[in-house]
Amino acid sequence: MDSFTLDICQLANYTGAMNNDSLGKIIRQRRVMIPLTLQELGAVSNVSPSHLGRIEKGGRFPSARILRKVARPLGFEEDELFALAGYLSPHSPKIAEGHRSYGDTQLDPYVARVLAQEPVVVQRAVVSILAILKSIAGGMIAETAAKNTD
Image 1: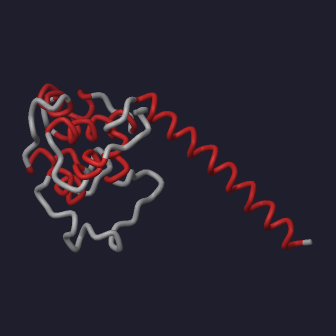
Image 2: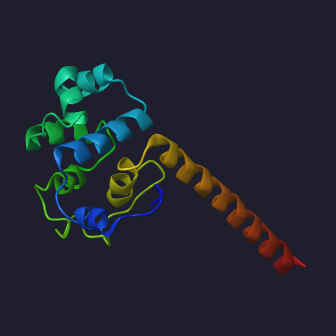
Image 3: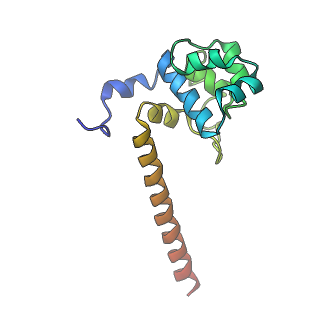
């Protein structure tokens, strides 16, 4: 089984609350993408960098108070992190897909969970594939627009 095959048991885990390790990976991934160091995140969130490091490594599960403090600096809405941690149902009215709008700077929580499970090389391959698809789509749009102006 190659690394791109998604095990059905793994897929089932994406619908429930995160375990320490998975939530920590998502938090770390977001922090690194911004980019922030543990010390910088600690300074803006008023949470010790060592505590944040233990959370990222899966050694500690963050309390709601800690999630509330790190949500904004990481670009999450509080309810997103609470749902990922299992403190809120992902089907809560505030979290319903119709309510959420993901801008250019936000990462869908489901996508974050899936990518957090993959090695960095796979994450980078996904980003490369997305760039190629965007380029192809942009070319197709330009081609269609050119045909419509002729």
